[in-house]
Amino acid sequence: MAVPPETLGARSPSLRERPSPCEFVTVDAGPSAGNSQMKALLLISSGVFCAFSIWFVASAVLQPLKVEWGFSDVEGSFLTSVVNLGFCFGCFFSALLNLADVFSAPALILVGGLSAAVANASLLLVRGFWGALLMRCLVGLGLSLVYPPSVKLLSTWYSADKRSAAMGFMFSFFCIGSAFPQLLNALATGYSWRLIVGLSSLLGAVASSMTYAFVETGPYPFPRGGFDAKAAYRLCRNRNVALSIVAYCGHQWELFCVWAWSAEFFEHIWGTSQQSAHMWAFVIISMGGPGSWLGGLLGDRYGRAMSALLMVSVSGLCTLVLGVLENHWPFAIWICICLLWGLTALADSPNYSALVILHAEQSNVGTAVSVQLFCGYLTTILALWLVPMLSAAWSWRWSLASLSLGPALSVLALLLLRPRAKDVDKGSIKGPASSDAP
Image (cartoon, rainbow, N blue to C red; front, side, top):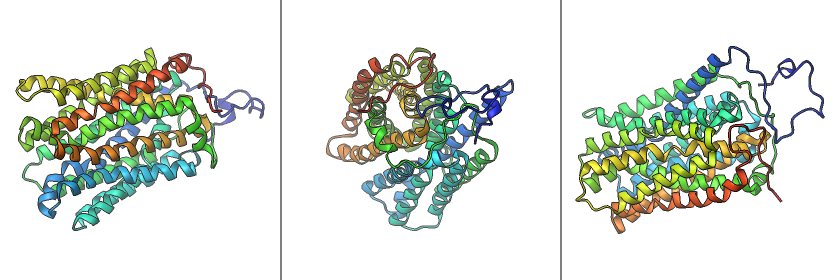
């Protein structure tokens, strides 16, 4: 949405006065900004919640699908990871065509949310593995038009020094939405898996429609971008953006595998019942909600790279310990470590997006987020495919421990990033760092 000249000053700025692509556009939000800001935050976050309940519904209903349709474990892992593949394809073409910078974010969210809901509901009609695989891939394609535009749209409602906390709040809904199908599975014992699929599809369609109807661009818009075939290439050559994305990829290697296979970890490592495994999976994944908000608050206060470094170090250590400890340890100790992991595993995530937005050219923020998510979720495809193979070759314990390699990569990238980002990484941000592109 274009910003009227009168909101920027007494007269429309001349070409010389207009912001460069690497400068933030800020305006006076006005006295009623607080209510509008909260409405936008809640609606965008609710849309993300519903979108990611669609994303993870296959993990929650995988066991009954295996029984009804005769899936193997390998086919089940493909059904879980193919959403990520569809999402990666969508993010790749979105970044290539600059969709998130050319088109209205609410419109993209509506189209993507409705597409994902329809594809998810189509699971009720298809029969067999290949039909389900295609529908889950289309779910990922649809969600690629929901997540990156949601991050950009929310960023227009908050100044740079408050953006990580807002991202953390939104990602807390992302986290609870990811866990929601596990809760439905645990509570809906005796009910058909079709109820879970149908309910998640309905929520996704309603939430995307409400975002389109009631949320517009906020008082801190980014410069309007057009089609730029070289934008993604320039972003990849920006050293600060590249390091932020590498750190994000390490985070994704660990996070999505534990989320997707958490119920299986409980069943195979600690011998819980299937219903208890899904309930514990919901509790631990949901811990990422308050953790994400906390990580965002710490990022705004003490620096995004520092906050992310602390959180990813703790979560990686928890993953390693959970895989290495012998089974004779008391179950209460396992649960305490799992809860600590759940609290810290998503707490670094809002800071990666804030760092990417901070260091990218401001007219290409949507493209930058799409590139970040493409790389991160491409990483998850390999990880989701590898974990069941490692568990078959070794054990579920050692496949869990191997996921700590991702946080180790994140720590290395953040240590390289911190000295370069320290001047712009705290609350008194006036503009992003230089691109560092040669």
